[in-house]
Length: 402
Image 1 (cartoon, one colour):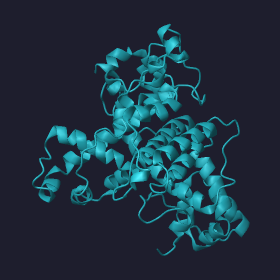
Image 2 (cartoon, helix red, strand yellow; image 1 turned 180 degrees about the vertical axis):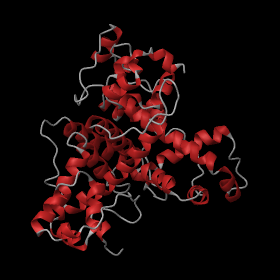
Image 3 (tube, one colour; image 1 turned 120 degrees about the vertical axis):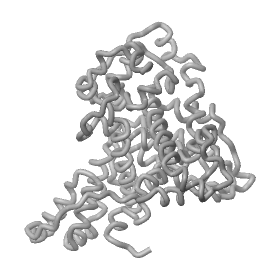
Image 4 (tube, one colour; image 1 turned 90 degrees about the vertical axis):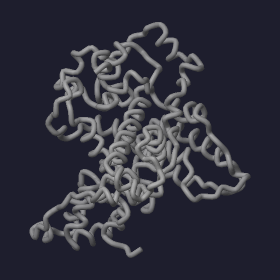
């Protein structure tokens, strides 16, 4: 592939492209090289950096001269030090092979053990030691996460959670809201990298292994706080809704391509959206970016399979804390109080989680009766949004029954 400004900046032509644009400014072109580098270094996020690199051959040249330092700074600023370990984990997990002499399951278990250690490190994550290949891979991934985040917000914040009325655009996300959404999206991709097999890959018999739903729950979901698993469940519900909407939108075009398939069958749709979810965020983004229903149908023509259980089966298992009756389970059984403290508390819930549990410790997630809450991603938003909607003044059971 011919190297371009986009690929050098960590973007490939096959990746979803963001539409940010920076007008050519002759006065900016005339700045000394060190000031151009400072401007690039100070870009708030990867899309802004991409736009600057595209804006001028002069900025492109400065970027090439210092791309490792620039990418390191912008990536850390965009992803955030709290989420960077999850982004790095996705990159590393994608490199776990399906061949070799040992079972892949052993490699995955070893990886998860190391991931637990790195998440618990007291040292803040940085990009300083990363090579340029890793930085460019992470920048492509973050570009995808940014694009999906935008659609996620549009899909979850388009109507009022209680009244169902259309509401104004959500505006800029807070740093806390970005942290919650980003980490949930990265953890979705991490789950996919660890527990799915790419199509067309032949695995030697000696390397084959299998994780059942309980394995995936206990190995992976048990790492996180219960409200963080509910964040992941919100992402799962969003992706299922999006694929369901797309399948309905293109049903006539897809029927022409697959005339022998009953695409109107509701059971099949449930099964197939599970498979489509397993294809990941990049596939979803390509569908969302497709210019026509025919283009979407073409992408889906050879992806008519059934796999309802991707992620869903793990979420439906009884949580680790419930099965092994840990201290958190005991606290829940004793009716211990759980209060919202502050949105900036990285390890704490947002205000809507304790609201949904009647201010009590809970160990259960992905509960059926909370599906209406997950539709607007209730565990993602800061207190300011929740108060603006006056959602915390409403009995959560009223919203669940809506």
